[in-house]
Length: 321
Image (cartoon, one colour):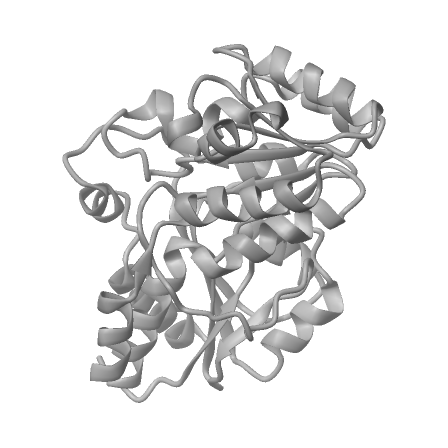
């Protein structure tokens, strides 16, 4: 790996949850219609920033996610902009009926924030780990689904979500992630972003897999494979033409996601390219549940979600084609 790229990954990390809490606080101070609701996890989700600093704009709902979403829908009907918080598995799975019937069907202006997504709550096992949240939210008409790349993008995603008149789901990792963008980096809902150019194979990433993608690209470069790194902070809706443009000219693509390979980033891109001959390999979590571990890194390796797995997938698809 190139020294500069390795240093960039190792030295610049920031927690996306902390970035989220600060961004929401900034937004809520500027717009008093912003209301934060939480299902007894405000310290983890960082909606605690609203509880501490703007208590009139905070509602603690207790461990009652379905009721929280119903209240959020009611607040939206009164002109408020509710941000409802819990761990991703609880924010999307337990209140799915309320999200479908009371939020998405009437297209209400409710934002749902799923924290500690994927494997990032490594210590609490399958009950607290969510590999299905992107799939669940993507199936719902009117719902916008975002999975920001790093702490900088989290802030942009919060402001973009507030500007959308309708339901939005934001997925957040629990752990520190490399900071790979800055305030000048473009961010537009629905459009992928080419982070690094390359001509042989495109590596499509978001959130925690972006750092892995950079390492995988460096490993491939040592083997004379020129990989393009493309970020997908939006899962839905995806601009089909923008996706095609971002992948134009490569011989194959690899998707890498901290989600089930069913219904996540890879599936969304496959739908966009359904009439394209571009061959594709997917790196993600197989059709299985999570488990506990001592560290996040242990789980990522156990579920074969690593830079080396991305590298191998790229070599496999290029060899096949």
